[in-house]
Image (cartoon, rainbow, N blue to C red):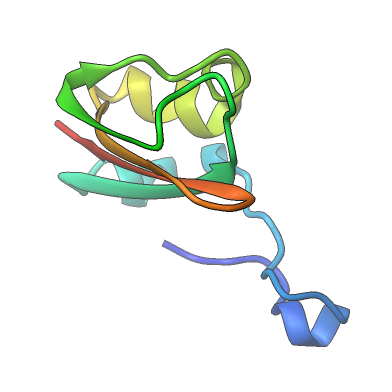
Length: 90
């Protein structure tokens, strides 16, 4: 899809953010989207299902809202130390 400024160039571990609405044309061609976001302590360490809830914080985020409008739904999630990894399909 794309990425923001490289983390090492900015003196950080993570690459910079890319606004999801700027890549909607590319996103519309995908069948699976992987999202890395903040750890959510309200959710289990691992979940699978046909359509999992986004959680209180991620549910409000554009990174969830825009793909949702294209028909993506969260089907698996892993809570890691400081992040969560989400697999969404349509």
